[in-house]
Amino acid sequence: MNERHLPNPSGLPPPLIVSRLDCDRLDALLETPLAAGHDTQDLRRELDRAEIVEPAQIPSDVITMNSVIRFVDEDSGAEREVTLVYPRDADGSGERVSILAPVGSALLGLRVGASIAWPLPGGRSTRLRVLTLSYQPEAAGDLHR
Image (cartoon, rainbow, N blue to C red; front, side, top):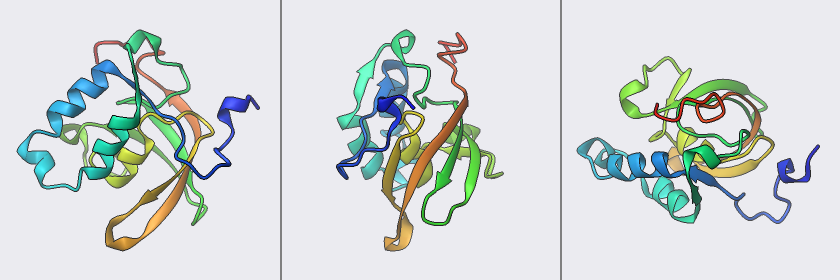
């Protein structure tokens, strides 16, 4: 396994990479009334600490908007495959997770193999680990999604 894919043993949050396009769109989303109905503090904090790069420079193992991800909840052992979407594209199926949902905010910008502790509603928290990335728009050449 490549060293960059190892979970961060220091306990610090893993590094994040976000495309400039995703960052610009998310900044605009966070200013809308739709976002006002959600707790967006953690997502804002993640965007602030992320390395912002041009879409064509996103590594192929980094989760971006509209990526299809398989991850495991390390606390429960449950695995899920989801598409990370903007709120307008979430359909309530559980297969399309909004960026404004806690799990969506946690996954953005992570690399395959990364693990992150994340707060959940009701004072709970979980640890998510990215297993695979089966589709990423940037790697597929869909830079204008």
